[in-house]
Amino acid sequence: MSLFITFEGPDGSGKSTQISLTAQYLQNLGHNVLLTREPGGSRIGDQIRTVLHDVTNTEMDPRAEVLLYSASRAQLVAQVILPHLQAGGVVVCDRYADSTFAYQGFGRQLDFEALQLITAFATQALKPDITIYLDLEVEQGLQRKVSANSAGKGELNRMDRLAVDFHRRVRQGYLEMARAEPERWLVINACDTVDNVQQQIRQRLGMQLGIKSQAAG
Image (cartoon, rainbow, N blue to C red; front, side, top):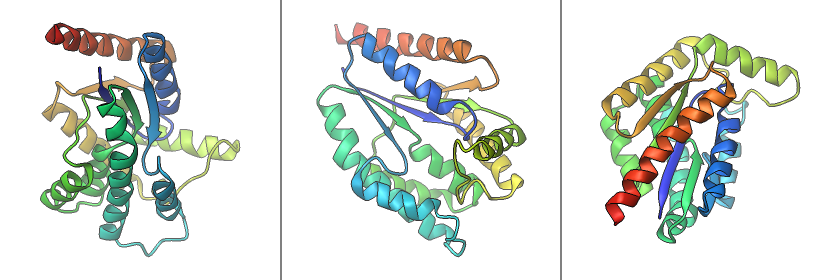
């Protein structure tokens, strides 16, 4: 049974931890789980990721940014995600197309209709079955990222260095998208404990897996 799960949320929200726990949970249930990420996830995508995250690329035009993210996504979908889903596997992806709508649509305030057309083309219209958004106040997320950077546990990339108002628009965008598609989105307070967050994720996955298995027979 194929299932496409995406995680969204700011760095510092505990996303990486929850992705790892979720993948292990699904593997324990007997699913063939593939973990991947955006941008990147393929040889070509990883090269694009380097360009996108390079803090010296300050002159990058927002439209070029969109197209680079979309190019990475197109390669990931064609080379990695679709083949695994077609083989009946489960894909857990760290960020996906909703990041473009949040960061370039709401954050950069680019034309939403254009973003939708570009994204549909890049993804072959593939949408996640479940999107888990780990919500965190902007200031808290940025502080966690800075603290991790100071402790040598990560680097501030080009997007992290944008103004606080930009990140506030991004967060608002995520929440608006979640309200528009409640059947796909699960919004969780990232300030909760690791165990409580994971429990909420497992409850949602259990519902999805149960519904799908009943529908199948």
